[in-house]
Length: 454
Image (tube, rainbow, N blue to C red; front, side, top):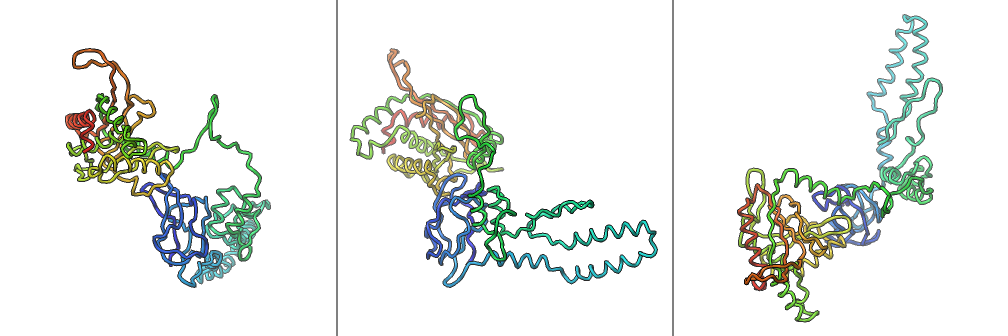
């Protein structure tokens, strides 16, 4: 049975946090059964066991953060025990400390070579050799612990010996945890084999360690104060993706204002069915999502992406929905949205947005997508230009519905409802005329919302 390692749950994941174990040490597990909850740079998701067997060892406690590929647990067959970490380390050290036959021969030859020129050298040179020889022998006599950088040699004037911490026996996990918690290994009493410092020893020392005097960055910055806030994994990914988009992707923008009065009327009619009715839960944003998909069905060339020396035309419309969360932004995807009804899109959008905000998504639910809709209307934004999510060909930005004076068919000024839509296009995929054709179809659908109900 293999050791269980931290899985790579997204294309940008380099490390993960073990949020919770769903099984205890000694529990039986089956392949496909939820084993743990892991937080990536994008979401917290349930992780299924890849093996059948018994959870014989847990190497990473809840709340621990480790790199992708690091061991986190061991699932053994019946009667199989996890390999002893201390034993493995001891064998490794003994192997490194034990000199090879070649090194032994070299050590035996060195004194003979040193004796041969002794008589021929002048006395001053002989004195220098005598002083240097003990120092050289002393340097060779001290083995270096595996994975530890050698300490600087003692000074000729009888300076201090090598640092004691370099000689402390500790497991790699214990060393890493000590570095994270700022614990001095030389001050920790080991409870492992031959006094080896274990992970539990370091964590116990970390709890008893007095709080550091360094000032932590406050969670909320008050007016008039400055702070440097470390980027979260999600914000690093967002920054990287934006640079990948605005740098290489040639953006251009198309904007229209639509008559939103028919949309508001359709929404009110659905609400009149009663609060408990499914139709009453359909929002203006749901209409926009459905219209964005239907317009792409009518103008399929916008449902594409640039790929080096070709343009990839997608058969399915995988609709991305930009969702603002506490740490940044997620874009869950509705697969094959062209085959979904307005009600189905409404239900899926709400479910995905809820799980995105609670970081309870699976990797395949927020990866990919062929076009994206970003709506800031609910936050009071009149209009804005969104950044394309590569490699998609465009993103649609939706503003709020505003009350404005408009001219009716009789040239009379009346109160009207208008909504701004901005299409950010990748000019390598979509030209101005093609984008205009898509927006024309989108306007027609939103100003005639009954077409979205069929």
